[in-house]
Amino acid sequence: GLSGALGTGDTRNENTPKTIIDQGVTAISCGESWSACITTSGELWTWGKGQDGRLGHGDTSDQYLPQRVDLSHLPHAPGGQRIVSISAGHCHAGAITEDGTLLVWGRGYGGQLGDGKKQASWRPLPLPLPHSLRATAVACGASHTVVVAEGGRVFSFGRGKEGQLGDG
Picture 1 (tube, helix red, strand yellow):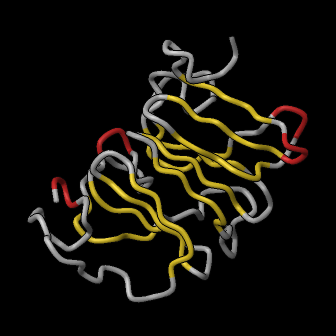
Picture 2 (picture 1 turned 90 degrees about the vertical axis):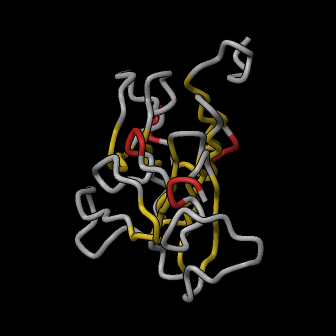
């Protein structure tokens, strides 16, 4: 697939299923020409098109094989933060750690990273939610992000030109 989106080690299209990860995977999400998954040990792996840092490896390189995302730069990560949820958007991503921390990275020009900077982040960064709430679910669209927090509160941010933020 284009830019290594299939994770098979090259850019060829495949017409039949190919094994790309042979360890337990608990969740997977696909963006535009890239993918992300979570393993049973809570590791985050990404592959495909690296533009805008969407793979979270600290650069914009394409990855033709699945690569583990290094989260050692995060607070509370000496032994590593376990990831429990992932959403791959068009060119950005959101993930949730086992303690409810929301992580965001990739293209941020439309405000979809929620940090107010409107620029890309090449590594996953924590995004505090209002009132120190913990995240329970995240969904990333083309240029927006929606998060469910404890208690069922929903937050949205990013480009809302077509009403996708639901904020009127």
